[in-house]
Image (cartoon, rainbow, N blue to C red; front, side, top):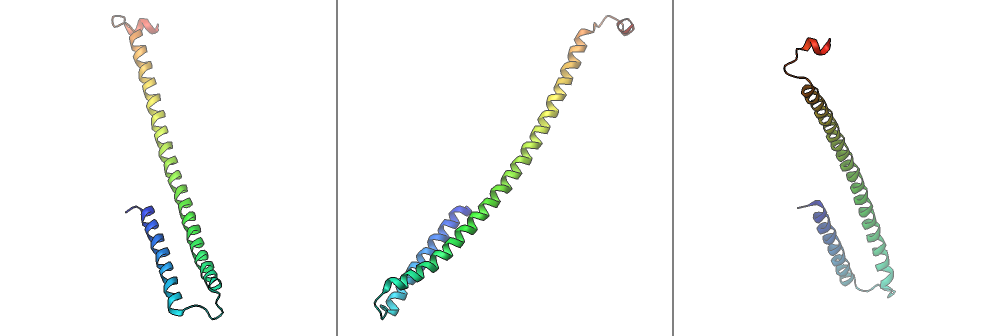
Length: 116
């Protein structure tokens, strides 16, 4: 399973469990004595928001670091490929020059007369 799907399933599971716990807590405890249920839900919402915000910030930081690592790896691979390509280009230019020089020489002429 991909990490992204796993993280999504975990997040959905945590939210579902939290919501279920809130409803169970409300039904077990009953309504507050002062009748203000929104005050209790606000406190638990703040708690949940703080935890989820921290998890999202941590996941964002992890993805950012992972992105930098992947870019560094890709840059290294690109650099190695360009060095190899540069070497091959130089090698084939030299081979072409040798071939051109070889065509200029006549097979019947002695080397002494060419360089003399």
